[in-house]
Amino acid sequence: MSHYTDGLTQLGRPTQQPAHPDEAVLERVANPQTGTAYVVRFTQPEFTSLCPMTGQPDFAHLVIDYVPGDWLVESKSLKLFLQSFRNHGAFHEDCTVSIGKRLADLLAPRWLRIGGYWYPRGGMPIDVFWQTGAAPGDVWIPNQGVPGYRGRG
Image (cartoon, rainbow, N blue to C red):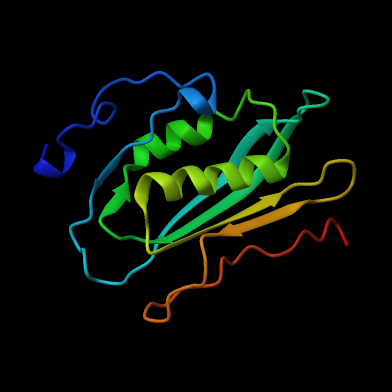
């Protein structure tokens, strides 16, 4: 392990999946490229949560982009955090925005956005987008690349 991993509690050891997002421990590491503008992208194509009304599973393709400041999210902790929604009942909007806000609070990035591309519920897909503010002009931010839902047509 390096000095970048000092203080991490989950990396390199067995870790239980948190039962609820509030119990999930998100961890961060120092950005070794502080002062350099670049984008970090996490894609979670098999995100799951529960409908808070019916208890039925909901599925989404999440794309999280951020321009780091002093911190990077530790990826194992992010995976466990996202998995903690598996048995959590919340609307699509709440899941998507709360994930974005929790990451923004932890990392204090120069910029962060999340796209929640939800699969249809009741025949209608719901896509949810949130960002911390205007995108910085000094970095290339690619399109999230997730097409709108087209069904079988």
